[in-house]
Image (cartoon, rainbow, N blue to C red; front, side):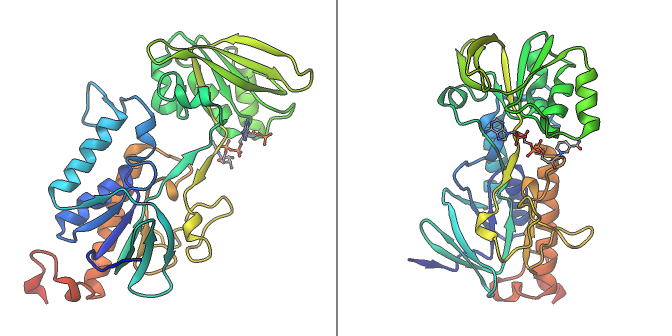
Amino acid sequence: MERSTEFHVVVIGSGPAGCTAALYLSRANLIPLVLEGIQPGGQLTITTDVENFPGFPEGIVGPKLMDLMRQQAERFGAVFRMEQVESVNLRTHPFEITTDQKIYQCDAVIIASGASAMQIGLPSEKALQGFGVSYCATCDGFFFKGKEIVVVGGGDSAMEEATFLTKFASKVTVVHRREELRASKIMQDRARANPKIEFVLNSTVEEVFGTKEGGVTSLTIRNLKTNEASEMKAQGLFVAIGHTPNTKAYEGQITLDDKGYIVLPHAHSTQTNIQGVFASGDVVDHVYRQAITAAGTGCMAALDCERWLTNERITERWGLPKGEEERV
Ligand code: NAP
């Protein structure tokens, strides 16, 4: 496989964290390669209107926002390639990143590979993503004012999303596959006490009906105890069955927590357990998970990376960032 030493820094992931890191790196003259992965633009590309990203008072559709972020980084020289990371070797330096097309050797890496919302796995769910099927209540709840919504899941996320959605929806039905909820007692109690929330237990969503033009109209629910199927009216389906951080490639090298998220061992730093490897965005964050927080930590990772490269004087091999030459 072809080897490349074209890039000093490789950013893995092209969501808000990766794009922001790329923007800051390029403006520091550390022209990065951004490996876009299988979902260029990240999770925002499967949502429609984004109304909570500052600077867009009228809102902006997710794919457009990501396109603008990418263009902004490209304006300063960042290079985006639609390649998928297959493995990494972070035990040697320069690091080695193997994609489906090349092996990149680089001095620093920013991992911004994000997390993927788990999906039920129905073709009809996929077809209506962004058109009534959502994976983020904070992002999309506002569009369901006065509507009837189904939330799938029995964990804290499902309880939190269901409770949040009652601000907008006329009714929220939580559909969970077992009799017992997995959620913490306090979150369950809060949801159960909410008069707008109903529970349909021992059940799964089997089919989503609707169109891209008109959104979701109804669902088929199957009771797993009786095996009976029934139709439920709903204009929205929120799937809250967990997230999977995209960290498979780093197992055994980067320290991960028990859920697979990257651990940042130092306070006020995006550096991982390996010097020169930084992480930002949803791959480290299962709490906030917002585009704006991901962008913020992407900026932090770029600044940490730039400082590390400068302090380690590794930049001498590649040419120093603009304005740094006289300081050496
Ligand atoms: P989770 O705890 O793993 O719960 C996932 C839920 O989805 C479970 O009830 C599971 O059912 C169900 N599920 C999984 N796959 C499914 C499928 N294919 N079809 C239908 N249902 C499926 O995930 P989470 O709720 O996202 O929480 C993740 C972590 O974040 C937890 O540690 C949680 O405590 C934390 N969290 C905390 C807060 C908070 O404190 N404010 C808020 C959100 C999340 P089973 O129960 O049958 O397995």
